[in-house]
Length: 142
Image 1 (tube, rainbow, N blue to C red):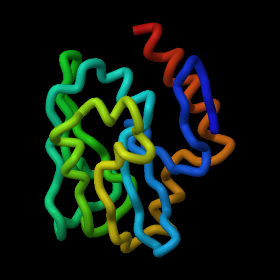
Image 2: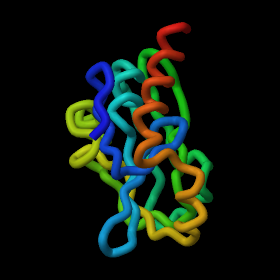
Image 3: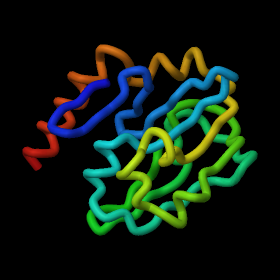
Image 4: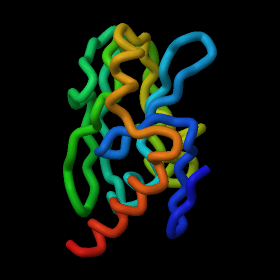
């Protein structure tokens, strides 16, 4: 677990530059969510728009959007694949995104189609700490 300035990011997960995470499940599926830094830096999250099951996305595409008092932005797909599950609980209780982003706060589940190649483009392992530190420093300057 990487923790910098109170932001916790499990280093076994894979991250996009826009703060979505991907967890490779034992059955080969991928669970996706918004990391703690992304959820907290968004401020008061007011609305989330998620895709429907069976929708297909390429890695790097926006699969949904998030609206907060600070900004409106897309949620980036970490891996290519088909949506197999959507966490509808999130739409009714957006606070879960900040309270438990890695367990209850998951967003979607995916059946990946290009996992090995897609993972090469994500932040993982020992790279998570330096990346998060740089993200925090960059945002402080703005």
